Image 1 (cartoon, rainbow, N blue to C red):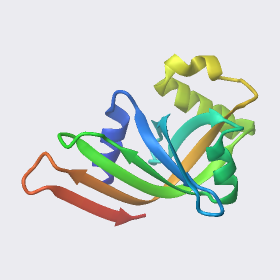
Image 2: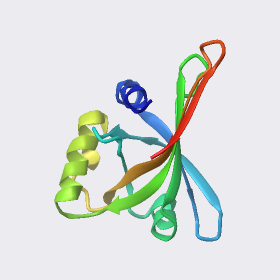
Image 3: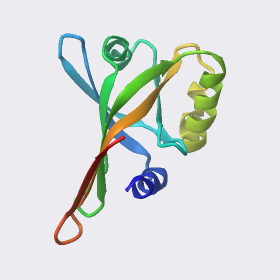
Length: 141
């Protein structure tokens, strides 16, 4: 299941997902985001350090993501734990990975307000409604 999800995520065009975060008091927020995926299935997203999602992650690192919008393609749901990457070698590594997948956003590379969200998946769900019966698989990591 993991190789199928990884292949799907790496080959989507465009590489977009919906990221859902929640404040400490439970107020939800979601956003369409560009993403990159690492070989170990961690997800890298880029954002402005003043965004609501950053404030939410600082108080509640549990996030959810959705990939795939059509019933004629795979749909993937991921729940995971997010970390903010703001400096050091890990920031440089995230920049390389993210901007390799999103060269159209390279203007944000190196800006002091640009940070990265690195998400480690803890739960996965793969749904394929293009087959009969539909294929639905879940797993915890």
